[in-house]
Image (cartoon, rainbow over all chains, first blue to last red; front, side, top):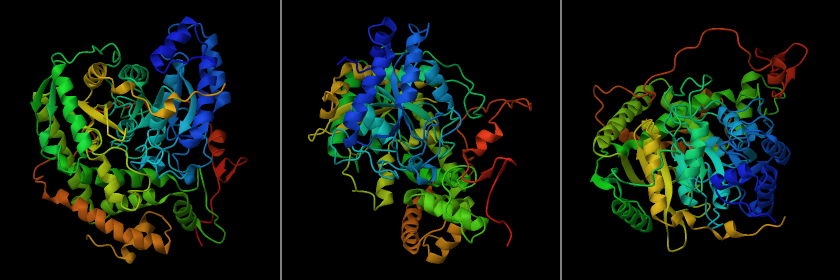
Length: 492
Length: 98
């Protein structure tokens, strides 16, 4: 059995030097998934033939020594389109869909030498905070198999936490990369809105969605961002802005950084173990040379209601395309007309949470309620952005817990949508304001459940959030804590 | 309105082209009332004279030239459809008019 290192950076180095072949690394990842994913359900599909062909191409490439992700096995959330892979968004309505094109991030990752080994489970259409809304069964948390991994990118988070792959990709609309990364004890990064092309990402809420990496180290996320970031003419909302240099920006030091702490937000409703980890994390920042400053985000309390009004409105519009005509599932239409076909297809193809959100979004956009709900929410969104602008006059990054609680038991919140929505209380703000935000492991509860520290920086200043996360990671040992499943040896 | 009746749910479901079971109608009537009552708190924020945020982008990209460029081939696109005619190159749907 070969020893494959656990970080993308080390794998790239080994493949570049010829110590390992990309095919060996790929076989090892596929074997680990085969051996261990039965208990996790992190993957909805694996693509060994496609992956081994890509890996062989990397091995044969004259650029193998310089490719930034040479031979690195990666997993993609199943709402990211890759040619020749079933792409379901964890929905029955797309159960058999195979996209005839690659997302821009997939093109860029494969051009950089990465090897897509599989597609990961998520909440249906990325709507949820626990991965329990998947039509194909929940994913389990590698740290405690009776608990949720967070969501919606729970499969990607669990896959990295169990060291099935060193690097995975998700989408983050209200916390869907950061919250599962925190609950699974790994790094997750949501780039600035516009930093990464959304072409080929199955749309949920277009003004909030952003693709980003999940990894075991901040350096790996920074390397991944160097590969996927940048303008794309196929996405009108991808920003034309200088990009790259994210990995180079990691100094390992807090020196000169002002860390803003919105004390008023961190108290009620936050698990005491999370509070303790957060306070100790702030001390680590200060001891490392950061200056702690108090900041206020007075409209943050409105973030969850504003988010659910805006995100559901956008979702009701985006999901209108699933009509049984061009792709995906079509219900039996015997005896019915076109409208019956639409209604039966959507009624039978969508799960409960997706229907609930389409209904809410349709309501807030409907005649007579648009001004009171949707427009009002967009105005409060402006107030939330202004709060951040003022806070960033005093601070370079804003620190918050990523999630108010550690991973909760499977089934605990499925009957109460509002309690599930509150899992995103600390993460939605960054989406509403378009800001980059990272989560890094900052402790374990007494039951050995991971806790994450979230660091948010100014719009399009992704480098500062990454730099702060990297400095924190290097000052502590939390990133090296592993769930038992990650150290299981696998047969070859 | 912050209380949904089953009739409200039926009307909305039709607008959204969603067939719902009786159980789903009752469940959503109750849950949507609860979620909206919670969301109602946004009314407390003073937004007089505040512009809405539809996008956080500082600038939007330039419009591209309106030129013919390669895109998805028709037969490839049709292959994803539940029902299509390769000969005519069209999607098939149930009758539109009674």
